[in-house]
Length: 532
Image (cartoon, rainbow, N blue to C red; front, side):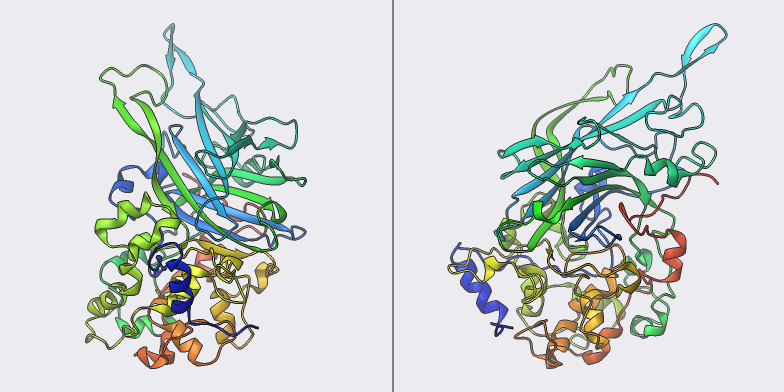
């Protein structure tokens, strides 16, 4: 393996070529991207909650990458009568950078349509429209008992997402360009056997430029993310304080705030060969949502479905998510909306949030600890740059950062080495690469932060990272250069940092019982029903 160059030296050399500063490192901690910025709280239909990107670990699916973008947080299963339909006035996108320059080179765009059937009943000789989404049991796509049906289209844009070449993703069976979306899980009386019902909406698809079909699914799922959310945002209000957070025997003693919530999933499985460029197996990915610039509310809405506003103008990005948790607990409050509107190539503007992060100091304040007793003192925080900005040497660093002249742009996104084989679900380490290294097994190379799988406990991994765990691991001489150029003595917690947790085990029995993951596509589990 080649000699490691300190990441700050590599970054300064690379970024000097483009006149930028350090990019944004992901310093995530204790929440996912649910309601993370002021504006997005007003537009939950386009609120991206989680993004997953991993080599498919379903049996027989080697050579495929799965991309999962979740939207619409905190869905109560009983949220009728309209439930959680996607917004037909929005543009949902999954972007791929397969060059390492912080720009999208492949974009999968999703547009939705909601059709009102106009179901009516004869009441006293008059035909009167019903007030519900359904008028009877639902069992098949476009079921006649559905009063509102949802459908969507998928477009692949090569190059710039607004000016590149666009081509439709088509149904591998029949060639159509419109796909049906299942109804949300209203309840067991309306939809008996929801898992079998939803499975009818998994489509084989022909992707432009690909000789091998992929898969697509869009629909409601059980929110797979697990986190002790209320305790965390209440200044780490855990019983026992720091002692609780550092006690590994308590790693699943807290409450999962998302245990009773659903989410809407956009899932794609794409042949690996259709995502990579040239000889570099590393890809970066993120997800966004955009709305039209203008919206005019009508004082006299017409009859129909979602007719209260007329929208127009250019698409304006209002949501962005790559690595988990960044905007929620890293970006300062004045810049949260700005981050959601930004592109990875421009992440140098957020430099201060990584070189001098506030989160470790906030942890000390929340726990009532003396200043400097827990927060690392190695500034700038170069221990996080390699892992979250440029990729880990020998794991998922794009070749762009070692090219001469370097073209790599430090930017925040998920990075995945598609050449590293998937780890079977039963063998996955919940702490991903870091967990394997700490256990002496050499690491689960297919785990976060090399991409992200639904089973990866990104909260615990990231809490360890932000409090200096990468420095300590580097000091122990680990193979993959975590925290290169970082002094382990700058981490007050020392080896105890690896015990940090939020009190909820992402891969633990409580989370799995509440919403078990699926062994194959679309991987995210069956949504909770509105009524049993």
